[in-house]
Image 1 (tube, helix red, strand yellow):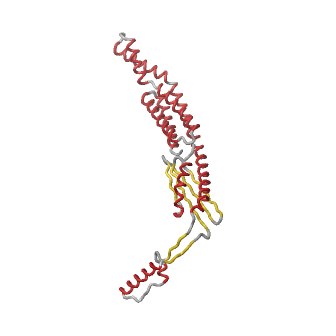
Image 2 (image 1 turned 180 degrees about the vertical axis):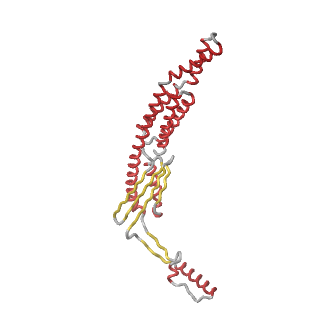
Image 3 (image 1 turned 45 degrees about the vertical axis):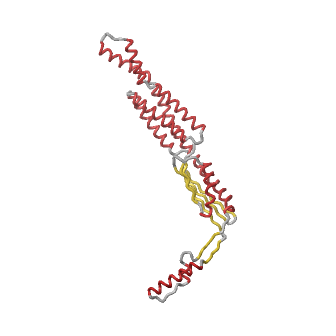
Length: 288
């Protein structure tokens, strides 16, 4: 089991090039990737996304990649046409305003498009280095997700144990519940018919009521869901979606038991079960 929240940062340098990768993970029902990297490395984004998709299944993941290079190939060129157009426009404006002023070099150099800069980089030169740092950061993020996931699983299984104990506790009241149903039905017949009680009618009505109010089937399904829940945590490294579904099924059975059984002792146990289940469902929002 892995948590979806994490933070990782890796920074490596070689041959005057420094690459840093920062990763932040948050909760999300699906995988939501956000990749931020220098514009001149944009051609690497598809392969980066493909790699991240292979490592992470759920969660909102923000990935920031930075590259610094000493003595990077850098060229400056002058756009003479732009400079001349600026100079002429400023001259016309000065004439219109009656000013004796020409556009100086300091002014022209500060205007957009007069100086054009370009960094000439071969993307393939940086690909392997960027990818290796990305892998290292992903390893760190995944290790943190696993560490947090282990703590989360321990907490979830503690609540599962509460549910299992509660099932056993309620099961012990089933004979008493069925006995109460039978006694209440016989008392009603006695009030209405006196000594003229039809035993076959009583047995028939009792069978109908037991089918309506007994909770044996719900307890059996509940035990099955809890067993499947534990098995899923053992055999699946990313069980979040399946466990969320099982939690919904468990909640349905608990609600049915609550509605079918008015016994005070059972109602108290149901309250504990709902509290444990709510804690489980809250924790499942954090796991992959």
